[in-house]
Image (cartoon, rainbow, N blue to C red):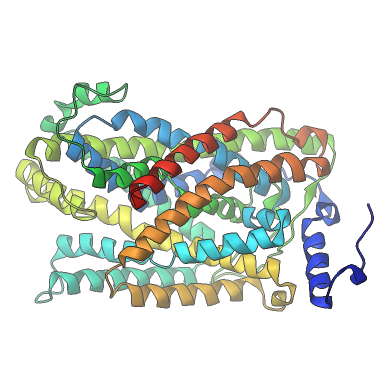
Length: 494
């Protein structure tokens, strides 16, 4: 292949950008290493649980229970397919990271530098207002404690929101390996959530509705109990598209696998806290060498990836079903339609009637667990992504170690959160964030196809190449395309 010379470009800057993009895209420059051995299932599993815990707090407490509270079982049958749609995307995201040790964003930049910059800008805008999760968790804690005494409800919510952020940032700074802290906390949240919801669903009033509720999973039950509100179209489409982790949230899985040390990622280093020894985190990854032992190890890692993803998706599906069951048993019969995070507070009042104060406190603890972990996991993941992108796009930035860049971005995100928590989320920004999420959901299946089925395979041993055509990935793309078209039509009245 002939290489273009500098004389083919109008100025030296264009030529340097061309050369830089060629170097980024050239996977053959990566060193080859043996595929690391699988450490055992108990040691390896974890990123899927983090995925599950984050998904619970980023919308499952709101959108699906709201639709059930308003329309009964009309749309419940869409929940399971919506969750399973994310399986092929997570599989391709994890596949790239485990075979190269690189983040999925690094892979997107390898497809084309300009494409990576475009996604970077979209992602940055989409996460400008994620501080709302900290204030939402603060709302649950304020309702739980009614403290500080004498403060307004808004003031109490902000107090607990800021307090949770301070605790989380301090914990990150004092941690050994930051991901280990995140995983352990999210596992605790997942356990508290599942056990709490199971306990709540054991109420006799809730169990009485279970047979009819189960029928709703197979298809619409009876006629729609109330007239369709066109304003709910965007909520329903959002609930379907973002069941689990939608939009740019789904890319977080790559970074959790990377710091967990899954596959080739065990060779690239981890972000550590001030309580741990700094590790050398490399931006470029490695390719697996063509050895019998490497092939054997990859076979086990491949099974792990499918299992870990299903742990997250099935776990999230079950917890979402439990919140929907509670909404169907407690809210739907009374025609109550609380908005957004008020849902948890309203549901807690019904438990106070049946179980007394213990019931109310139980559900508020569950809601607080759902919501407070979202800021922690999101701030950590976005800081990782920003660090990774800067060090990939701008090689000179590697003069600073990855840990310093991580803390720079974590500090910036904390400041942005502290400011935006004081404000009501502006309507236009919420709409823009949702639109960006839909755009990302459409782009990712196509980008993953070109990355994992076109760019990467020629550089892999035969045993590491894709075995089948990615028809599940294509199916996800088609469904998300239809959902995006419907969302745009409902949002803009087209």
